[in-house]
Length: 288
Image (cartoon, rainbow, N blue to C red; front, side, top):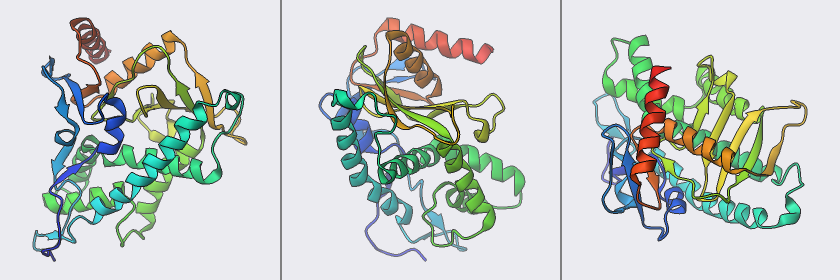
């Protein structure tokens, strides 16, 4: 049943600790609304973006919130680990002798990053909404809150009842796909990466995650993860540093822009030229 313990009402589906890596002052960002085709005139506080009210809450049979902030607290546990792992990654990338290494991560570090990428893909408002639409068709007689519980249980592997075979297959299927891809750390020296309200962007021509052809996840203004199909499935690349060209940087920025659900976030104001390019890119994509 719902209780009176401390609660977090505004729950961020893109972590603030992540977003600050795209900000010059670690507090604010500019945005471009790709649906309204309007930019922000001033930078906005990071704490005011990418959140929804009680997006991660389970509901009991009476329709009340059950165990306030359970998932929120589990996600918060990743916060300090993310900061520590990212700081370490930035230091490693700065060591030029590491460029030739095929695997820069230890087994533990690699496991953390695979899990983090999976969680970030699963926790967004966009993913939860799509899952809700999917399960509403499968279970048309279920109420909205019941569907919400099913979505969360299938997206976030934290809940104490995560023991069904079906549920574990969904989660492990996604993680297995990531494990079967080569993982690169792209180092960009050609401009600043931006990110979005859907920061992990994947593509599959078959609409099946198991057939994913690439995944891009910008980490900071200068670094991004790039996942590609394994060249050698017996020895997947577990974190190889990849210095990208200007053309590669632009292609990645285009992909990130296409993946945005509603807003793109940057450390600088969106110029008319950048906005025109984003609009054309997304319009062309809709035509295709």
